[in-house]
Amino acid sequence: MPHYTGPLLTRATADALLAARDAGATEWHGSLDLGYGSGTASLQADGWQWRGESYPWPAALKDRTIHYWDGEAFAAAARFSGSLIKLVPTEWNVPTFEIDGIKMLPTSKESPLDDARRKVALVEPRGKAVLDTCGGMGYFAACCLDAGAAHIRSFEKNPDVLWLRTLNPWSPDPAAPASGGRLQLVHADVSQAIAQLADASVDALLHDPPRFGIAGELYSLAFYRQLARVLRRGGRLFHYTGSPNKLTSGRDVPREVAQRLQEAGFKPQLTLDGVLATRR
Image (tube, rainbow, N blue to C red; front, side, top):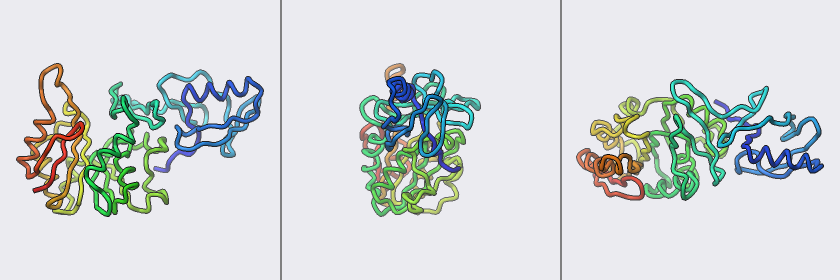
């Protein structure tokens, strides 16, 4: 899917545009792509222009919502097809996303992109073939590209998440010159598609699955054995786990994951908010 190139409005950016108009300004300087870049909008009484396109003044916009131009109005970057999937602004500019109101990426202490960068560094992707099992917004893949990975194969099974990626300027576009043909984004369920990957065909692995209650198969011993099969000996895996249910049930998901990874052929250690493991 081609990436969207129009303006992205939050309530704050819309208010800033309107305030500039009401103050009599003919131009507004700032970012209309979630801080990815900056530019100048020309302001008129009946609307405004940006990158050569004209837009009407927006009506009242929702809080905690990113809006895009759908050709007729500024619509929320959200879809409902069984679950409500929504692109959500953060104080760091780089957005997160939610599924049925549950935030999918850590944002309390740093941007989700900076969080991804620290985790990607653990697998040392420079010059390597990397498997990104659950692509999401593509921040792991973006960090791998920046770090000089030779090739990234990224899987994402949810078509609504893939659509959100086309709206998000911080999500890497496989077709963009900046990607250099190194990113392959596959619309597929990695729990099934991994069987088609060759033995020892990747040098590093990044595994950021949805929580266990949504995708328990991605925490199974059978799946971890598939990860061990496709990763070369000595290759590194970072597995995000978080600490779900620890306060309510006392369950220690990171240690459970580490134990299963060890049984599957890895040498694991608890690191950051997950498990770093080396293929034995």
